[in-house]
Length: 225
Image (cartoon, rainbow, N blue to C red; front, side):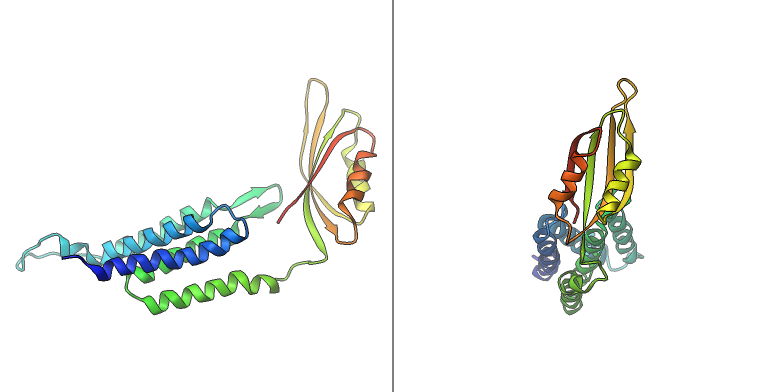
């Protein structure tokens, strides 16, 4: 017998996971539509297997069989935490991917709800998740008057990292050093900084100040979302 009800549960889990993934894809996150859809598909499938596999084992009516259907579900929660952890990236003092990791964990829960046949709950959680990812992101307590950038500098042996940091702070930038490397053969240096640039300060002005400083061979400024 073809279990259309079980197919429907898996399809709903994959579709609702795709809804969350589509929002992540729109914002250019590494884990996007396909990843979230597959997570929803997998978690829904695990739940379907957890709740129905015993009926496919052809046990007799007189067989004494004890099944703990919660064991697979518990493993899904642990596995989703491991998978979501892989979406978190750290560069210096900057941590990225926390929201995407939480979204993956959420999709796992949505898939489990759909796989259990709790369609109304799965749809409701998806709607609340989309609300948090789209509407509430605009209300987060962020300093909207500044933009975060990563500054990478190639310096000769005579350049002073402290002087460069002071130059940026004189422009009104908040600066923190994330990496400072010096080669042993020729003394060349590589300096990486995390900076917050006020909207009133053009990036061209920052680049002009850096390239005019003694010992700077190359300057690169990258916007960090």
